[in-house]
Amino acid sequence: MKALQPDSGALVRYLAAATLARTADGGAALLLVLVAVHRGASAGEGALAGSALLLPQLAGGPMLAAAVDRARRPGLAHAAALAVFGAGLTAAVLTVGAAPLGWVLAAAAVAGACGPMASGGMSVRLDAVVPAAMRTRARGWDAASYNIGGLAGPPAAAGLVALGPAASAAAVAVVSAAAAVLAAGLGGETPSARTTQGAVPLRAAARLMLTDRPLRAATAASSLAMLGAGALAPTAVLLGQARGWSSGTGALLMTAFAVGGLAGSLRAARRPPRGTALPLLGCGLALGAAALLPGGAAVAAGGFAVAGFGDGLLLAAVLEVRAVRAPEGARTQVFVLGAGL
Image 1: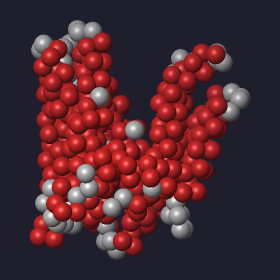
Image 2: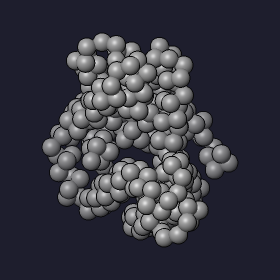
Image 3: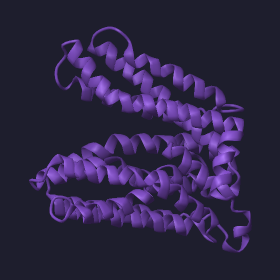
Image 4: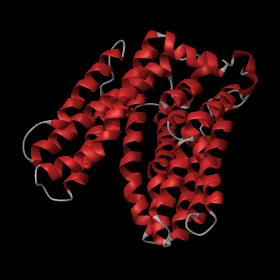
């Protein structure tokens, strides 16, 4: 943490809020499946609830982001969205496998609509609480919080289910509430200086992402990278089967990818790029090819780690481009739209 320097207190508080929110978000879908099975319901019911978490992000997320951009105090509006996310997820965990499916899907949909505020939307708060001189480096730490949340969320979900659905719901409520309280206490905004006149309509924000060259490149690169990352989990399992490795090799490969992603983000935090962050986009994508290196299990794990390292660099670069290029009145919308894509 030596790299955080003078005003590191605000950054530490921000990272605590972001990591808690992203850990809850990262383990949410799996938690719903595991709780459903634990109660004797079908895994399909939990999977439907998980889908209800994801689908509203495509429509509800951007509309919520536009409302936050128009809010007189966007920081408090953002914290409220995190609180609603936690409440909806807690209700879904309490009801999945124990109440009519419609109630479960409704609770999950409410959480899902607010979910982007725990991921891309959270990054918008960074510039409000961190001095300009620290922001490029801080975005590397922000990217690391994504990786930590993705790495910690699924095993945390698995561990909570062993304690029972009630304990799982309580843990979700506590973690989400803590993230909301921390986010509300970040400060960094002056209500009298903000008006709705500078807010950009949602359609204009979407058009900006298509017409602004750096934003367009960052959106295309991150979407392409996430398409590949999403395919890595089944690929890791199938790769292990095809090469005759043990059944746990797939999980090991994905762990290597996650650890590599954390290392890449920390590398970007320690040595931020000079000038434009666009070259990191190409570098991050290129390193992704290492995931399919031929060889034994150890070589494959190393390849997945290198691919994850590239993914960490890419994420830090994407956050930097969005923060620099998005205007004040459209910043939350740009981050949330990019994350949804």
